[in-house]
Image (cartoon, rainbow, N blue to C red; front, side, top):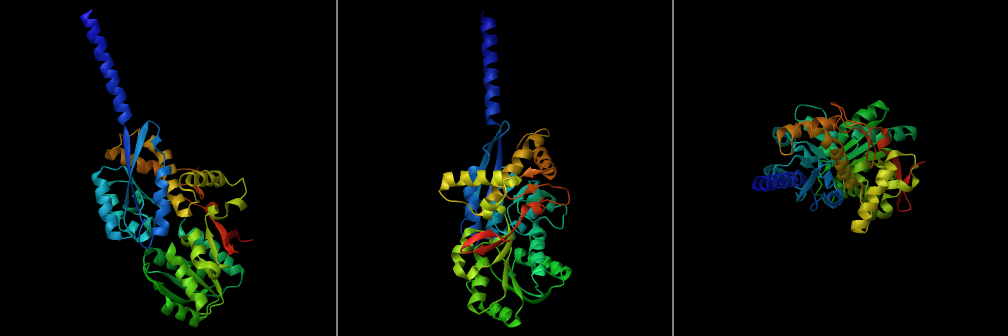
Length: 383
């Protein structure tokens, strides 16, 4: 009797122990965002979207550890070190392109996949042994640029002025613009830069106006994207103005008002969701994200928040495959997670469909963009 009772107690304790171990199976994901500073219009919806990320993937519970880098690249590195000390298995963020570029070396050394919700394609191009640990949850500049330059060519633009951020976002956009301009027979006759923290671009604007191009392309993201356009209008520029997907947020219209009417950009379908056909595979996912965000925060999100939400979708698809190679918290799991993310196929996100390859760690195609204008204070499909 005593042996039987002891056996039952031992079995019960073992079962309870297994149950506790299963309940404790956990994956840690770090999130770095810019909720303050010049990139805050991008970072705030990204911070808010953490609450909408999957809390459980398969049998794993997921803990998200969020840190604000205040739009400062040095703070991004400090935050990453803190998160690596927490033994994270993946990183989402940071919000800014220069911040993300500054983390690539450390992410590669640690062997931790990074899902970067930033604009510049430079975080994943050209692919190398370090950038293979980075996956980008926004459209590459070439995809956005192709739509913009096709429109320029069709509407008779022959000369172009460029003004962009003096950081990786602005530099990569100038590279893309130069290649596409040459392809479409368009000549870039002015090339200017400004910093994210600048409060005036009068000097640069006067040079652009003096060059008198048929159109101006602004290569900037978040709040800074509106500054050159307002300045151009104030100085009497009458040509067309094009913006990248970095300006795809309601605050762009709020800050620019009537001065940004007629702006042309290629960006996410989220900006014009009511005009998108129900047959578009991303419409349902985007609607779900917007509804969840509104339920929590009482307002619609900027598209930048969707880039963090999509990171959660990518992880949800890859983690079950990675678990076959090891447990969270191990280098085997993280390496397998990187491999699984690279094998993502036809994953429908909020802004397009992801198909990753060893050469393409963004994975978007033309389904990830719409040609959009601003009319009567609203984003509208350009028809």
